[in-house]
Amino acid sequence: MRSIKIVSTRELTSLILQSKTKLLDIRPIDAYNGWKMEGEQKGGHIQGAKSLPYKWTLYIDWIEIVRSKNILISDKIIIYGYSPEESDYTAQLFLKAGYEDVSIYQEFLNEWIPQNLPMQTLARYKYLVPAQWVKEIVDGKIPETHSGGKTVICHAHYRNREAYLSGHIPGAIDMDTLALEAPETWNRRSPEELKKALEEHGITSDTTVIIYGKFMWPDNKDDFPGSAAGHIGAIRNAFIMLYAGVKDVRVLNGGFQSWKDAGYEISIADEPKQLVTDFGANIPMQPHLAVDVPKAKHMIASKNADIVCVRSYPEYTGEVSGYNYIEKKGRIPGAIFGHCGSDAYHMENYRNVDHTIREYHEVEEKWEASGITPDKHLAFYCGTGWRGSEAFFNAWLMGWPKVSVFDGGWFEWSNDPANPYETGIPKEQMVSIANHFH
Image (cartoon, rainbow, N blue to C red; front, side, top):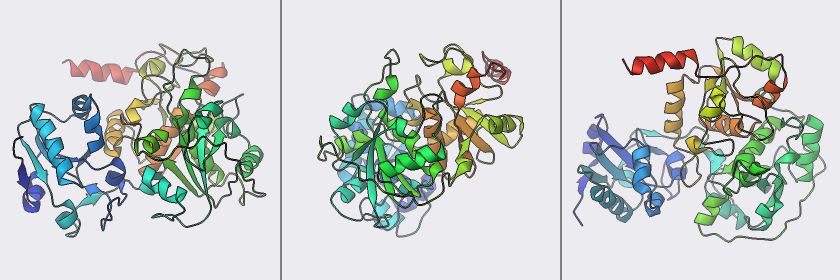
């Protein structure tokens, strides 16, 4: 093994200003976002650092992940984390992969944080929780940022209780997405129905809800592919709970996979739901989070708003509808392409390989390249609301001030023959492509 150069705090403050420097934070993504996972005085990451968790070095395609994050072989690589051993191991991997300028910064906890040097956090990081935070609650403790009040852990699924019964977090109840959205329209249910459903699951407006799902390799050819895409469904439920008025909704970052990766106990008990008599607030408490067709039309016509299409590019251009129950192909006129993943049941553009939410700077960069900016009112839509809800949740976590879900999405829009639609590559994209080749 080659010895790796150690960078001082003074050197780092100068080096990170150079364009060729890539500062890599190899701590868990949750620590990067803001959680103080080793008792540090301050949470977050060094300003400008990229997230490359040590956990990923265990994956056979680690170098492909590195390349996908635009970490070039010509870059100056500086690594920091919690453990010198993990930093050194990661640095050695870079050297083996042909990277030549690799060094380590070891004073993050001892100097960078105590000296109050520039740090960044995900604005609402506390609503995206690590598995160890949930474990503390399961163990009867009160973790950081928790009020100490009642907590309900929900394992979300769509028509798939077997996903829950085959293994879940101890003490978690199951929640079918159909409890909160109606299959006739796939929109959120009525205020009366939401009130009843939340009460039946033991949830009031003051309950801390932890929600997660299980990724089970969805196949678009199946009759009900969403039954295997539980974590997107969980974030869909989280959005509806926020809309309804649950004040403290937390999503387990990475879903059940993160709990499993942590090696924590898995239960197969069918936990009974503890009903409550009153939700305790008028639903919806946050009506602005949901946009319906009339409001969507106003937003399309406004210079201060954008409708963002969170679907695959073949869906956006009208090559496919994306769903076995949606016939019409195309997009809402004027909708900005907001990425998603390979199809209606995958969110690769918003997820890391371990299903945790992607580094938020990368999501911002993708959005900025598409013209999606926080100064406008943004309504995210997909086919029926799941992917739109996940994109919304990313923007909400970032603290973007005016974000909503266009709940009806392509399903409701395309079902009305009076609504216009577009197919093909938008003209402005054609111009951009032409300029690229001249």
